[in-house]
Length: 223
Picture 1 (cartoon, rainbow, N blue to C red):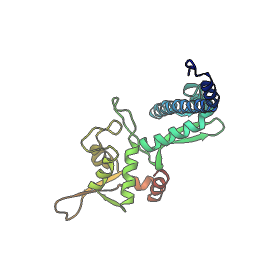
Picture 2: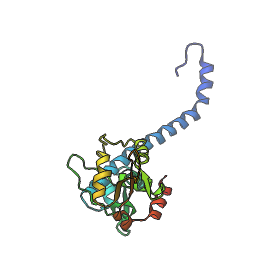
Picture 3: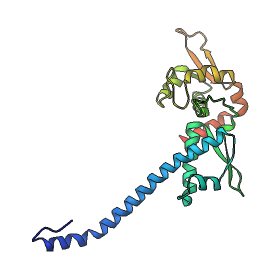
Picture 4: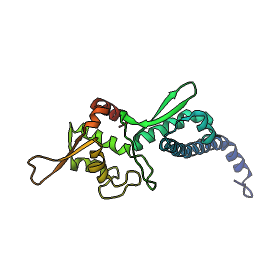
């Protein structure tokens, strides 16, 4: 803010008053830069977690610090917490600490599901998150959910039948065929419906591996 000729006294007064706001602005910039950097590190950690899950390998805090958070080691707890929340909501995976002394972790499908996904090379992203969503939707509909209600809710999340999703693939096939064969869902025509309508129910494998109480508890925790 260079002074113009004949304005020395005015410039002198402005520069003295501007010292504190300038410092405050610098602090805000530093905080914003840190948040941006940690956001990038969160997504790098998500990629790291998914690679370990697909390889069926555990990971340690030391590995995360050395490979992802080299310059942000003091922020391990925050970044791991945010990345863990993301993989649980989107991919249906839960980060569990299996050895507190060594800070060793593994990723497992949430809600006690034993879903063993066979992923094609071109589509190597876990889809358990979609199954968890559908089980939650059926649970809140009290045991069975009309097909239109399921697709209406999923459409609002960007998951549409007949349209390839970048994580879940073609969702209609997953819901009406794959998870029906695996016993997680039942897909049937509503008796005496005219015109014919279909509905989704929990399958026997879902009842065996989890419970409505766990699902509703999960839903209240993440909603």
